[in-house]
Length: 365
Image (cartoon, rainbow, N blue to C red; front, side):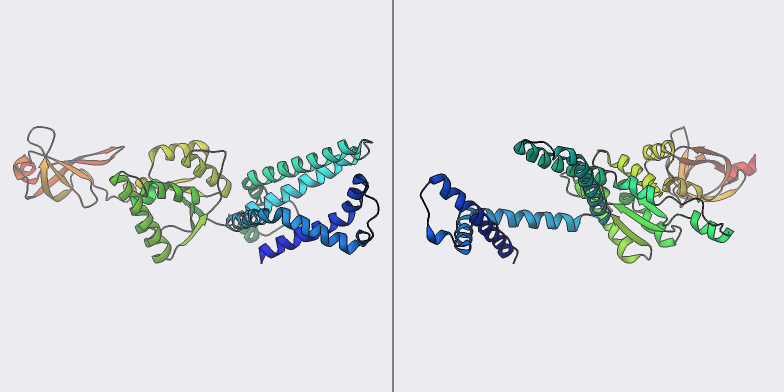
């Protein structure tokens, strides 16, 4: 159907050109009067046939180009299309205002060329500005309006709340996998937002030639499928991109600022960058450390000694949450259950470490 429309367009253009150009061609060739060419419909038929024959090879290329543009427009987010179109319209309006004095140029060729050039240039610039600044424009339009009639406290509280409580996942927290369990518990509120550029990085990892990376990437994709299909939390895919930014983490921070959302990560460096940029960040490692059971000096624990420690005659055990317990004089009890007393607790950047002594030894002392 589209091909037929393009062919019909060429036929119409050829007919119009035939009506107006054939008489001029006859005058230039100086072949005299040709009676049967004086009829407009005959000239239109000749022009349509000539243009159709000379451009039949071009029809397929134009059809492919139209389909490519159509697919690109359909896949593009609605905000990209909207603000790109608004920018194009604004650029054409500015071009029209600039062209008013240009039309007064007496030299017709220069005037026509300048009009075409200025129209294309400003239309292109307007579209690019509207497209690339779409995120800033969305944020600008979503700012709360001030002034107007006075509102009660309930209405003001509703307006102060963001329109959507977005949680943006980065690649590391998706691959980690614990995010699915956290979502299942219901601790996360709002909408899980997964940017398209994060998905592309995850897919790139899953396609890696390195076996470890490939397995990590596939695990991340499985985690996303679980969150989207099995859990009750709302999940959205953000298809926009920041073409002027190369790093995925930088894009994520920029998107979080635009969307007024929070970045969910377990990456220490990204955590620091978000804090410096003033972006809210939720680190699941901090959450894991916060919910570990509190152990105080003097408490009694029953632990299973699994290996020897770094120092002489030390044994090492672990709590259920992975907290390491260093047992003094516990090396000889490797592979057995042991009652111990906590002597001190050390909080490090890697987590919590507990030092203990054998209960029998403490009682003897």
